[in-house]
Length: 204
Image 1 (cartoon, rainbow, N blue to C red):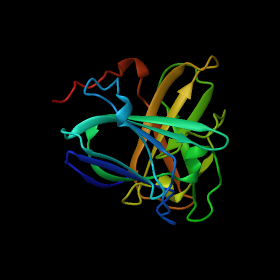
Image 2 (tube, rainbow, N blue to C red; image 1 turned 120 degrees about the vertical axis):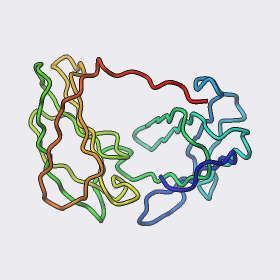
Image 3 (spheres, rainbow, N blue to C red; image 1 turned 30 degrees about the vertical axis):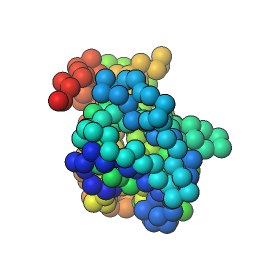
Image 4 (cartoon, helix red, strand yellow; image 1 turned 60 degrees about the vertical axis):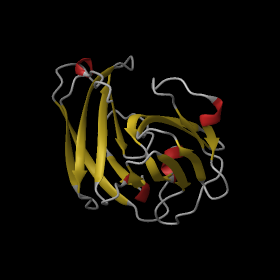
């Protein structure tokens, strides 16, 4: 994601990735009403040949956005709740559609998961930025990073989760704002309990 924020003029341009920078047509974007849930038909827009959806002046500086990304084989829907509005570039890396291999700019990192949650864990999953998440595994392993999985500053952030045999979320942890070094090992401490998650207060 790139661009400027803090304006009531709301526009998103969808591009494939930072490397080729090609616009993407046919992505659906929804601007929700101020209740952050409902929306009206005129605030459902599809990107044009330049990858642009332009909502114009929406009369507010914050809002909730839903983006519907469809490919031939899959679909991913993402919502961003009560975020600053403005003019954005939204990069759609190929890995957003699944676990496609990187074509270039790939780094491989090994992540050692330290499980501090005192409950039985069966599966783990790691999710870099802008990726739907690799398939769950029973033993921690190395993962590959595409250009689109890096932040604007070229650092990486990875979410790790652990689930039970019945797919119950047991715990989670983050690796935040780390420099990417190919073949280096990083540690994520799964030390957060999902029962402690609370919704933030609404901003005015």
